[in-house]
Structure formats: C-alpha cells, structure tokens
Length: 168
Image (cartoon, rainbow, N blue to C red; front, top):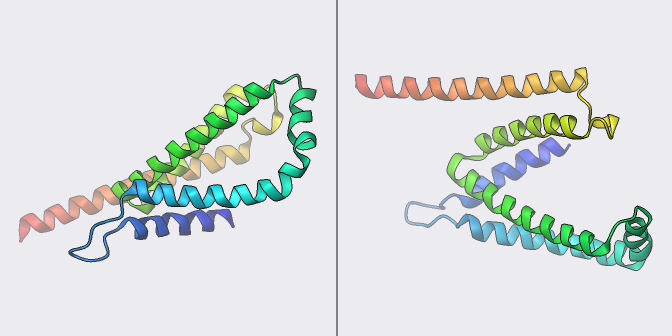
C-alpha cells in the first residue's frame, strides 16, 4: 500500500514541478516544498492537538523522564528533526525536477538499502529486529538489481538515440 502511495506522490511531484505549456514557467521546488510541508505540518498539528496534547505528560514527559532523559535535549532533537525533514523535503523536490520521478524513486530505494545496512551495523546488537536477515538480503539484491537494470536501460536508450541521430 505505501509503495503505491509513494509512487503516486513521485509522479504528482513531477507533474506539479513541470511547466504547463511552452510559455509557462515551472513552479520552483522551494514553493512546492513549502506548500507540501505546510500541509503536512497542519495535518500533524491537528493530530497532535487532538490526540497528543491532552495526554502530553503521559505520552511524552513521563516516558522521557522514566528513561532518564532530559526534556531540553528531547526538545532540541525534535527541532533538529524538523529542520532535517525540511531540508530533505526541499532536496527531494529539486531532485524530482532535475531527474524525474522514476529516477528519484530509484534513488530512494537505494537509500533504503543503505539505511538497512547502516542500521544493522550500528544497532543490531541493541535490537534484533534491525539485524540483516535472508529476506532483507534478498530484498536488497532485488532493489540493487532493479536499479542496475534501470541504469543499463537508460544508458542503452541514450546510446541508441545518439546512434539514430548521427545516422540521420
């Protein structure tokens, strides 16, 4: 289900960033990023206001303090996470505009492979669910294989187009 949602999201982002006609200007990635980020922030804000704020002490403060955490550090991490997401969102739209939705999806898939490996390397000893399993190895092989086939096909298509253009 989520794969389909992301695929639609990539395509809609590419369509949104593309010029509408020969004389029209493309919407700048920064504008799309601000609008989608604003809508996401508003949706999350409604959820937090309805679900989390009424139980803030129980859901957040108490859990942080029970683990010996510091609310100042926790708040700083939340702000840093929000800034990181804003930067990633902006970078994502520049990537879609420059490379297209399909290439961006391939990049995201390869990023997931890297994340699986890094998580396993750093945290497997702390949480068994993050360890590499045969199923994850197969999934990573399929993703990397698919990316290589995509690159090969794209490179081959460009080579054929250049050959056709030179022979005309």
